Image 1 (spheres, one colour):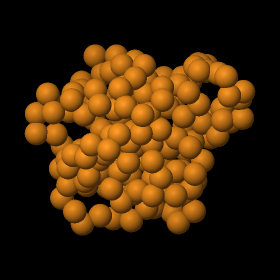
Image 2 (cartoon, rainbow, N blue to C red):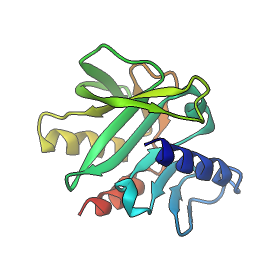
Image 3 (tube, rainbow, N blue to C red):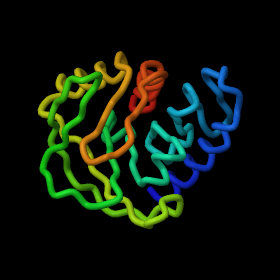
Image 4 (cartoon, rainbow, N blue to C red):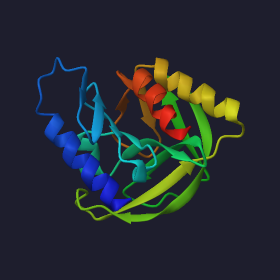
Length: 168
């Protein structure tokens, strides 16, 4: 996980210096949508799609989608361990609480305080997960309980649809 975050963060920071009019930037290793949604092309990285900004990376706040057992898995990371069994996620003012499972602690060299604490959202049904991802694809802003910075959803629609193809 540390290597994935380091590589994707470095690539995203380099791409953030590109002109603002670039909607999609792509090379052999990654594809970036709207300058913030970074899709890894490396097969060993489980099709990870991360919303990356320098500010969120510095704060130790991550939102990502990756493949697990052939399906999309929504992941969050925080700078401190959370005690709550569920997490509030709000898309354009509409909140839902989703159970989350602790996935472990990861050392992140880009996060000044060191460790990140990862969580996988555990949706009640595949339809509940698809409804959430649909809201994210169609929304403008996502706020995540316990994270100080929002996730801008511009570009997420195409990014999430393309990410799903890595899970097949």
